[in-house]
Image (cartoon, rainbow, N blue to C red; front, side, top):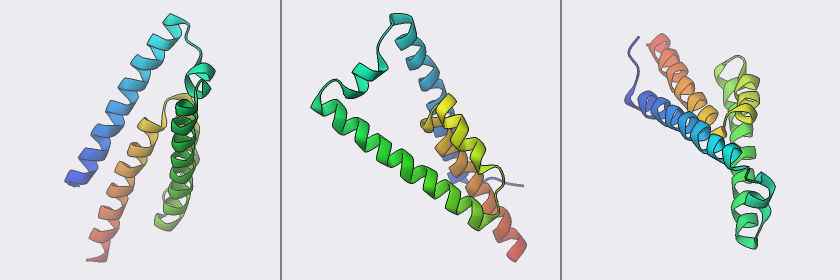
Length: 110
């Protein structure tokens, strides 16, 4: 089964998202930085935090709707993993597997 270029782009973004989350979260923990202060310290932080929160909620809704539409199982796992790892990892991973599922469905329709 040949993967599409889009699949590889999403998968690459997912891997980059996981690596950067590990590195940057590790640095924050080692330095003893406060996540709360970083997210909500200033008005600019509030804007960015709220923006990311809305994107995260929209991403979760999209994942649930698309998973149901395409018959993808265990979508809840991406949502749980995003809290443990990063949405920058799980959302592109979902998109990669969604791309794979759509390609599989297109092959069956031929």
